[in-house]
Length: 391
Image (cartoon, rainbow, N blue to C red):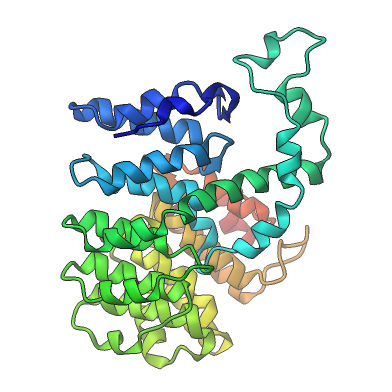
């Protein structure tokens, strides 16, 4: 297991904190007998090679070893490892919902990035302590213009994505694994590879006895361009939700009244229960909220009703997809110009949010992401000020 780990020149590869010399120990730590040691190893890998969704030069070389661990049923915590693999492929997947992964755009952005990375000096432990006459990786990065930095970063992302792409056959095999959490994580990861759609494998997984696996496979199929309308009649609510998400992904405004009714019911519901489905960490109502604009103008009023109803029952991270969708709905032209009054729909939104104290909170404190979202639209980041603006 993990043969060849020392053949990689990790010291010449950069991660979030400099040379990637600690990556081998973290990878070995995933096999540690103690659960706490494995947790620290996984946390270390997230911090080093998938830091808040950012990928690094060392991310792609770590992927083959992670895939090797995933393929061995004796490896503990494989579902968690699969989650890391998905993060290395696409970063924070919430950024790509409700659409799929824009890999063609990423490949176009990466043109020229490989040459720039090859020309970069090797990373050092502390660039600030390097001799003044030695060009560091930081010096090199700061010497690039914005377009060059973007190309190099996009190349690193493409390399990480393609490293996972090379393991798609192994990920498809995991859809038959004995662990439902592993099957679900595999279906989730397969959702992000439109160049190599796994339709046949995912269609088979729709019949999985685990609701979370079947629902995850349905959503993955939708992101890859295949909808299964018959699943709207399934007695299990998670399966109907997933079928509606898939129909909205593929057909948009032509998804049909059944899919629209399902999404509106989920998006406007008061439940904050989370299912064991990887998308949005199981926040089915939040994903339904993200999907509502795709239903088109014919459902705009009903969608706003659902979103505002939901704002009264969410808190923490569950607020973000609902709030973001509501803001885009009532401010379709972007931020409110300074001094402009709110229109009726905007006033209704402002009054609703100002009267929903939990939506402003995360762990008992004011949630900075909510404030940032509001200010991005020219709105005050305080409920009293927002209420006053609404009149």
